[in-house]
Image (cartoon, rainbow, N blue to C red; front, side, top):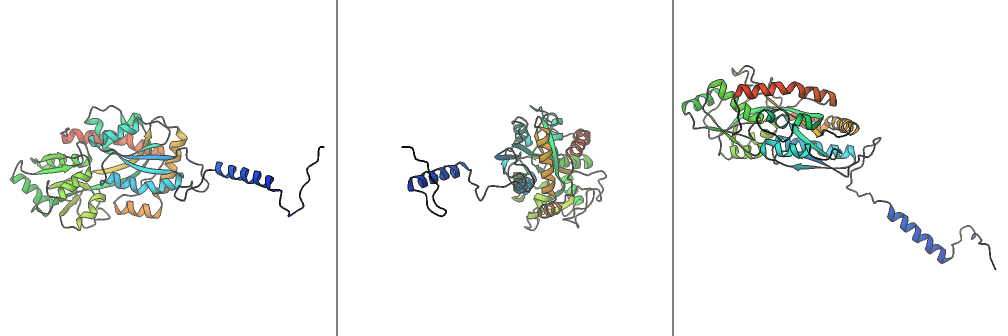
Length: 346
């Protein structure tokens, strides 16, 4: 005989078989919901989820240089803003060409980005036979920083200022050398320019990144180098190196007592390293704009802004269009510096 099911009285428990089926169903539904890990970044309030479980931010240099430092400054903020994990991937070598080409050839899905600089984007194309064109094959996202260089020497060198350094090198042609993070880097071109300005016989020693170059100057293996205010500042108090001048248009905020090269009789000797984020050229415009917006928000966070100011960089945040126009202006300027200095690949 068919019997109609009756609802149990309010507050009464359902028979055990029914309860068991209900508990099993509830457990299955809970298992289908992805667990939110405590360490998993969440999208910033009011923003859509970013379509990548992980974003690879490539630094085309070994750890320790300014590019690597900047990548690690912005990565945590981007991770928080995008709601996804942003990892810094060091792919050094060939004066940043290896890491730059890696990103240019990556899938244009917004999941791979480059923390590049003027070396890899606008300088190397004047020195190397590249497999890619960084200007054509990468899409600008936004500028991160612009940092002046510092001319410095190992403490064993008796030169206390730039004039004494020039006299020391002139007195012993071919005896002294200077380090850089690679042929074509602004640090290399700065060395070539000072050689040109004062007719110096000074050997260039290129490294696979500014970190290794700085390490060898600290160790006394190479006595002279140019480095960004960012990377050199922590080492000045050690007493192992001595700063002589900066290459900025004005004195560095973090080193107000250090004269500029222009002040010391080198007119027009203004060189800055600039850094920015890039993605593969075919990355959809909405993703590029999203990255730009979140990057600009990160750059204006008080802690990040303070770190950039301490490095000697002003606020360089802006739109994608502004960054693209800036790069277009930089192309002929660095082509001229390469030609004027006579720089070549060592």
